[in-house]
Length: 429
Image (tube, one colour):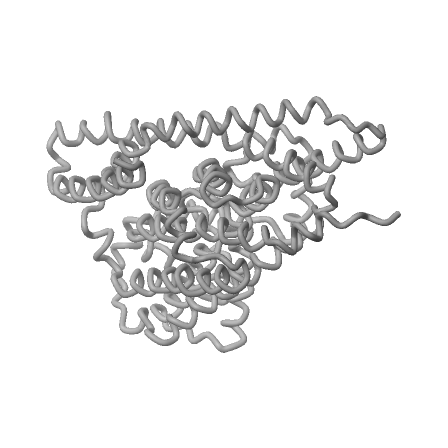
């Protein structure tokens, strides 16, 4: 059986068995099965992948920038990546907000006050994170790390951009150093970074051997804890979010692949199905990064130097699904609380969601503090976020799938013939 079928089997099996055992949470052996078997297996798998995110991101960016700089391509690749990211994010937010305005899932919604009581501690934690959020100026300054080692330690807690900046700068500095020595030989340290990167891919290969079992364990844990309520609660809200994600995936991305990248969308998505299933299961763009890079190079045939650069940056900066979810959530809660947002305020939400989507941490639940910041900006009660916590896990799985798919699409858009021709042009001095 092919691996993506095993992953799908694990996914479906986890949902079915977890839902069937959900009513028996008080039974000792069932609880022990989840606590001492399912949860550890899922966490071991995720930790294997998180373990290599920092060395893989750093080595991939250093190698990518170094190689692009040799071909005079860093500026072109970075500008095209940013351009396509902003375009895709704008479409996703507009689709989400358009659907909310048409179907109005928050109108007539009965607010269950018990939700606020049950989720009080979660809301307080999210609110604290939102209040501690950096100002725009501070965020720009702190992209440059004072201590790269500290940035590496905290990379999975929101400092990934600082680590990326350090890697980008070092990659370009290595190129300048080699240029200054006028040596035609490759720097020895580049072979070390390449070996670190290849070793990281080997760890991915080993981790993927237990991936079907781990996917089963992770999804089983979610379904066991929440049962069908995770799918039934807030059905219309969830339906609008999922509809928006599907339109972005199969309409916007397909058109971009067809007319800009000149690729078959269906073949592209078919070749990416394994990493998309994996993204749905883990709910983490960062955890999917190793598999995304492997898929880009070995299945999609993208140029390694370009795909490594775009995908590592995209894991943090290209969160189309998150941006769409944030826009839908803010307008949905505005409808629930009867806050009538003007066109100007909705435009403000669009801009804030695009920016927030670029700055959201690629970890499960990373969008929630950002949503509270946007809510505060347009006068929606912050405690309202408790309403969507029950379905956030399921929707997180859905939007992460779009985030990871979007990273691969952006990489394909950047890696076109024109880019290669521009990189091969001689530089006149």
